[in-house]
View 1 (cartoon, rainbow, N blue to C red):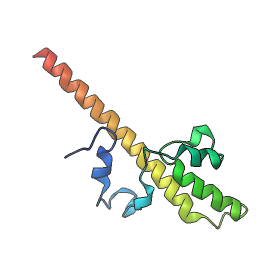
View 2 (view 1 turned 90 degrees about the vertical axis):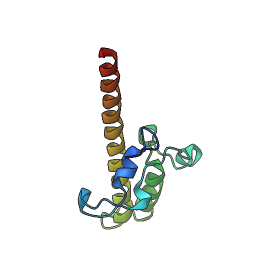
View 3 (view 1 turned 45 degrees about the vertical axis):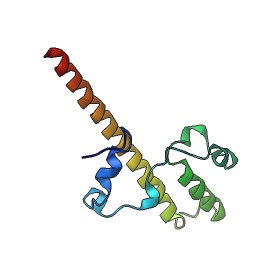
View 4 (view 1 turned 120 degrees about the vertical axis):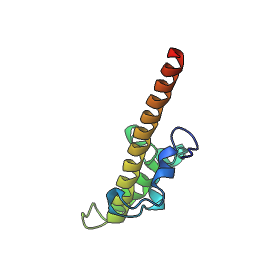
Length: 112
């Protein structure tokens, strides 16, 4: 498999995969490393939530405010945000596993 870099390896694994979470993935739900910090600041997104999915939280919170936090509304936005958080988690897990493989290979090379 080919990885662009350590963080975006899992994106290549998930494209076309329908076995995870029972279906195809929303292309909007992929984490973005380059967030618009000014937009996050203007939307009053707390620092703890300004991660790779912060751009989706802006849309979700706007929908929530517009509908007065009606639980029947904003389902698509919430699902997209949660899927993005899940994909970001998968990226972190894959990056950690790849880091462990690299360290193991380096230790094996030192032993030889």
